[in-house]
Image (cartoon, rainbow, N blue to C red; front, side, top):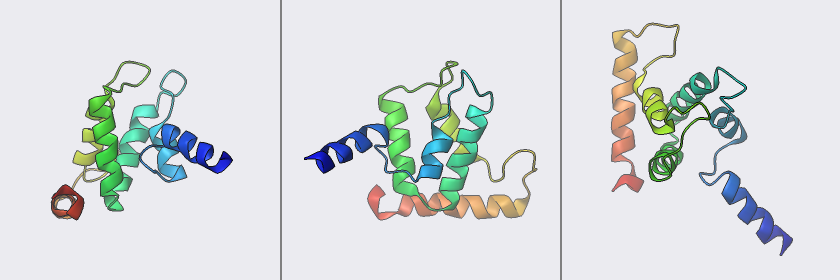
Length: 116
């Protein structure tokens, strides 16, 4: 019984089955950390690079359906899209090679079995 409650509680706090590192990067408090949105973008980009497509789908679905915002009012879904659209993280500047790596990865995501 206790194990079932622990699993249920975990699903409430981490419904997308994120790793500890990903969970921490996506759940900062913007009211006390000015880097929360940037950390979110970096985490989303890292998850994309690691082909964590199901978790990214889950995050986008939750942000969309629950209209999730950061404590400062910014939309999490918008920030997630920024993380998916950057081939490299600031302060680096994107080169053609970076775009050549990003676009096929996004295509693999759309071709993934869970999207069929």
